[in-house]
Image (cartoon, rainbow, N blue to C red; front, side, top):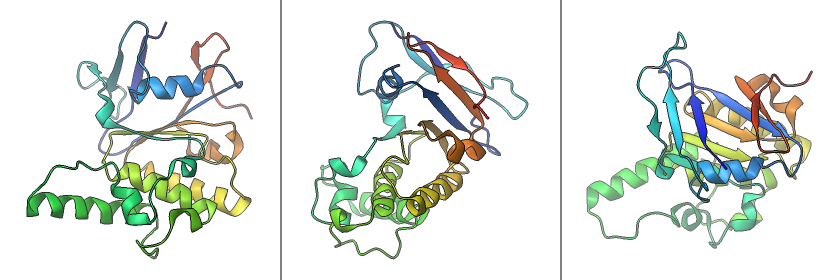
Length: 215
């Protein structure tokens, strides 16, 4: 049974980086899938609560719509389907015909997303599978950022990367937390600790408890 109130620190000055940790099999990935709308709760609803800088709610809780959430899976490169970077990024875009205004909007979003993740120097004709591990993660992030989500959730973003790629992704997440709210599931607590504003431990019975990261 899932009934979750997600508190998102979303003022104009400071956004948050939330981290969920816990033992394998406790339900962390299931929680992310529920938030992203990929799974349906057996009961209850998922709400979002916004706060001001002084910690007070600035509006009533509202239902969290999946269209406002982006998700990057563990090993997202396994789900790449296109032969080049451009087609991979626009794969999920609406297919209906649009005028010049729509095309300009999508082109602007594409440019901003590529800039945000440091992919400006990558050819859009390049095969996504030929990229390094770190750049594949950057591409996976760009795909979600084009949709301009309010909340971006990531499942084990450092998994399978070498030390340099891990450091690059940590730096990238540090930059992204200044632009939107991030919710991350990870076992890599030490590497992400400096970014975390709030953390929760998930118990094996699926209960989520607010807890500081272990030192």
